[in-house]
Image 1: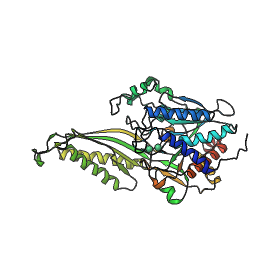
Image 2 (image 1 turned 90 degrees about the vertical axis):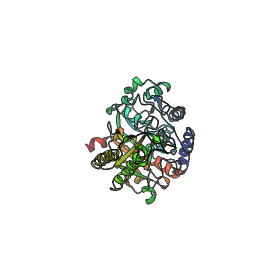
Image 3 (image 1 turned 180 degrees about the vertical axis):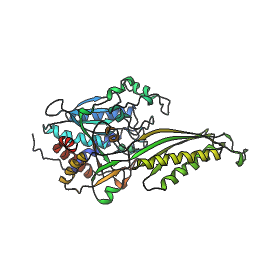
Image 4 (image 1 turned 30 degrees about the vertical axis):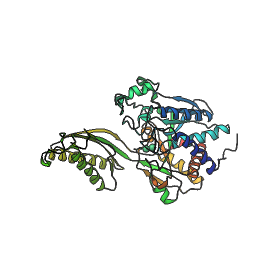
Amino acid sequence: MTDPSSLPPAADWGQDILERLERLARHSEGGPGVTRRLATPEHRAVHGLLADWMAEAGMTVRQDAAANTCGRYEASEPGAPALMMGSHQDTVRQGGRYDGILGVVVPLACIKVLHDAGERLPFALEVVAFSDEEGLRFGTGLFGSAAVVGRPRIEDLERRDDAGVSLAQALRDFGLDPEALPSAARRPEELHGFVEVHIEQGPVLEAEGLPVGIVTDITHGANMTVTLTGVAGHAGTVPMTRRQDALAGAAEGIQAVEARCRASDRLVGTVGQIAVEPGASNVIPGACRFSVDLRSPDPALLKDAAADLEARLAEIAEARALGLDVERRYKLPGCPCSPWLMDQMEAAVVAEGIAPRRLFSGAGHDAMALREITDIAMLFVRCAGGISHNPAEAITAGDAGTAARVLLRFLRAFDPAGRAAAG
Ligand code: GLV
Ligand code: MN
Ligand code: MN
């Protein structure tokens, strides 16, 4: 065994991490940026690469029934409970090369160092590359991690992608059995906790000149699909006073989302998808469907905002004689990270000579699901300009290497007894 305090230099180690991320990013449905959806050839290719790297790091590898890639590095005493790490391997449409997958590659880099040095820890280490966090293909956010915490999204299995393929069929085509989805569940007693490394996706660390930060809480979120139904008609003949234009109603609804969220600095709202039918330049829109994504650190504020918005949409629909349907797609309950894990992460940050900065996450993460069965911590890594969900997403090799050094320090010093002590 080598000196257990030895750590690879940040710049070289980070370069290797970025090169691996670059190789993963090539598995995309097309540019700009990276588009990788659940149960696609790109997903299969990335699973293959990750499985190879897990094996190279001395881990046993399997794919669970939810298409998550799962690796385990055994403890000094085989069968011991594990500290789980990981994040997602899917992306948004035209996303970056770091969101999610960084939190898979950094832990693997740490475990490879342990394996190469013949070093075992008194607890097992597991890494999960969750199959689908973004929900791009089927609108199923946190699909992979929900299954791991024993809440398989059975109700979503009949949802269809843009090509009309159901989620159940996509899993079958991927070589998996949708009926077996519940078998992906893990038991709380198998885990000491869950740690997710993730790019910050915001500007705080860059503004403060810090490479990494420790997450305190993850935001609450609510997502709905709004459908307004009017009457399609001739663009040239129907007088303006007699129109039931679904898209004009949606435009007013979208402005209502913005206005309601601008009324508080603790609320954000986004309409990122819109579909118009029949969709011709000379036809008055007969139907319009759009998404609404609301987030807030305050669950009461989020609930009020969603209710206000639904009331406003009803007013708009009534005034324009439109039909209205609001489908409450999902709620993501936010959560705090676990203080005992944050403290241990902070010790590793300080040992690396970095000022410990604690910060809030306005983005959702797989850790939110894991929180249902175990304690969680997150390490944020500075990203250029705070830009994410964008092909321009960027981190430096130095910061990637620093994150790996912090994580490896954390793992070597990790004391599961901290949990019992925290009560
Ligand atoms: C995940 O990327 C989210 O939408 O927060
Ligand atoms: Mn994301
Ligand atoms: Mn993410």
